[in-house]
Image 1 (spheres, rainbow, N blue to C red):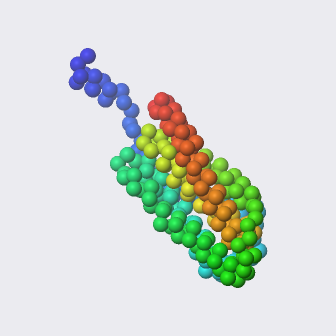
Image 2: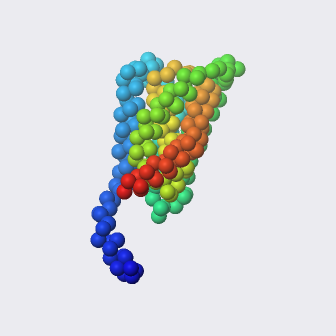
Image 3: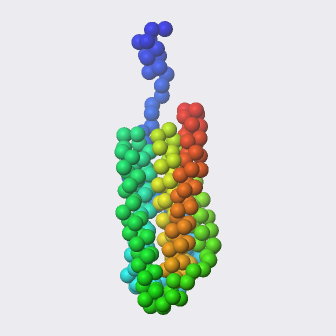
Length: 221
């Protein structure tokens, strides 16, 4: 068969291609679903009784704000990374707010030390924080895999790592609303630790899952 005939035959047999929604729209839809999941958890568990009092402290309000901003920016970054014509530098979008989030946690440690002395930086365990963040990542992570299923051939690892960072930061906000963890050093250890673990798992395991899922989508197409 001549090349021109082959191209013509392929053109006749190909069906219409459904264009993806713009990345900002897809990010907004996924964020809306994730916020609904967290709102349901908060509704069932109930917010902590002293939430208004805690948010009256500037560093605590800044901590939650930076976590929420990081989650939004990471979601936007992940959906832009799914497009082959976008720069890898989109992965850096949530970095400034992430650094500020860690900084607010560190400042909280300083405030607690000034207010309480050595007791303000006493270490302890809170596996509930880790379990909450990782557990909440499951439903949102499943929705993210579906939303990013066409990104497998492009940047599966970085895309899922940034996406799971968004999930973990949203979960951190939800955890701060319902969970009593007053010592800033404890929040620093368990929240940052859970976010780091979730992001690492998302980059490795989630990236491979996304790549396999995309291959299946392409095979079915």
